[in-house]
Length: 270
Image (cartoon, rainbow, N blue to C red; front, side, top):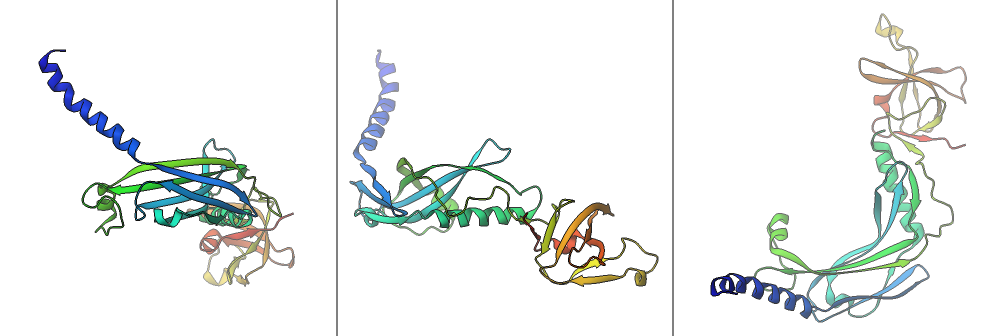
């Protein structure tokens, strides 16, 4: 190698060696002796200082009907310091709590619109435990620091170590997780299905159009009323449902989907 090439390669080689040496100096190991009684035992072995900022997560994945991607939901997630994880800690991985959070998440999107509603396909039998540790690029390397903005914090911090452990912990719940949410958005009611109203004073119109306002007779349905959808149509862009009331056969008429937009409805299960 001639002198010119040596001068060009020397800084690169030194930088690479320094990077490898720095990486080797960091010891950061996540230990999980096991799980029992819906609790997972965790601790971290590291040569980093106690005030190093860490995050520990325990998550489980699930899939949705008709989608190839998988999604994750946390059993546990905490930001803290390395000193909090030197000794073994027990974190809850209660399956009933995880199930409730998954169903709440599903409900949120089910009530948003027909486009965001999803059905649950399968739940992973494994959980993934992950620990991260960050450092500052400038000033004191480790320890909590206040930043004026999230962008500034993102710019001045870097991930220096990450450890992952995957372990088998099947989700055992008292009742299986239903694939489809029982909550339905304003624009997703299906003819042939029955629902309960989740808001009070929902107008039931006798007809869609009339020559005068006086001809538009209506009744206000109370919360909890059960309706059966027979059909739907659009008038001036608005979606209307033609419904009957099983408990009150003398009543039938039209409900504007706009009246359901804030609360949606609850599907009456078979």
